[in-house]
Amino acid sequence: MLSKALLKNQFRSTSAVANRLFASNQQIATDELKYVCHNYAALPIAIERGERIYMYDVEGNRYYDFLCGYSACNQGHVHPKILKAMLAQASKITLTSRAYVNTELGVFGKYITELLGYERFIPMNSGVEADETACKMARRWAYRHKGVPDNKANILFPTGNFWGRTITASGACDDPARYNEFGPFTDGFELFQYNDLPALEKKLQTDPNIAAVCIEPIQGEGGVIIPHDGYLKGVRDLCTKYNVLLMADEIQTGFGRTGKMFAVDWEEMRPDILVMGKSMAGGMMPVSGCVADQHIMKHIGPGDHGSTYGGNPLAMATAHAAVKTLVEEGMVENSMKMGEILKAELQKIDCDLYKEVRGRGLFIGVELKHDLKVDGNHFAKILAKHGLLTKATHDSTIRLSPALVI
Image (cartoon, rainbow, N blue to C red):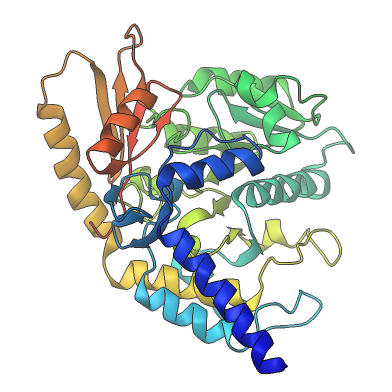
């Protein structure tokens, strides 16, 4: 009886695989539209597997991946060293919860803090979780160290920011697509004009209850927007002057994407809290976290913050392999070298549709003129037909961000 049941299940499994192998992109896309919430407008290309800089659809077509999981796959798809470490840990234990010490968290914590020059690490899962963790740490620091009255702490974010789609993140932005009909929102978050140091200083002068300023060194979802030279150092100086923490959101720009380990390194600027995610685990699983020094991190104690999956041994072993591989294989340096070539060649193209080509490392945006009858989403569809996958950001900018192994 058991043998018959196993044979029957095996036949069903084999049949399911066969049906999937002979399915078309359109058939699979139709199923997704039928059964899944329409919170993304995906191209009807059903990706089956990936390898280094390529992705393959169910019809056997190969594409250059120039979106790279929104920079979550900096090390390339399914890097063998990362996969090996992940499988080795998965065969032992994947989740313990933080109720117990596991063998991987402390090892990775030591590695990442020594690598980046900070004293403490706190692990999370998604990028927005890491940003909210940074906000909680900054608020607690403000109440206990700076002396801000209880429930009065404010955190400043620039216009054009993107750090997620939770209620708090949606309310702390100026993009109607994220906040319209989702309120009311969390208090204690205000906006200031991006790339405008006098505007920031005015906010800092008039509000003594500001706990932190959070900036993306390059605004990715905002359109690959690069601030003027000296801006990051200027923000650092203002935060120091007014006794405010500086939080750098490097979730998309970190781990070599811009040709430096982190985008703040372009101005040799050290934030008080560095927020990381995406390629921290090489696109193999969601891993994020923050690093900061003990005078900030010490204000978070048992029960103050946590996550069931944050710091799990599978995540930590995978992240350790991912970051170590990125460093040892020279991917940061390759990003700088290949990014300079890509940007230079794009700038040689004489095209009336272009407004600007900008970027650092392999984080490049081609902004189109805003009075065109087509936008970046149209170009993404055209590029897909020619074997290159990417996606527009803010409709008018084509983002080009391949894996750093290209």
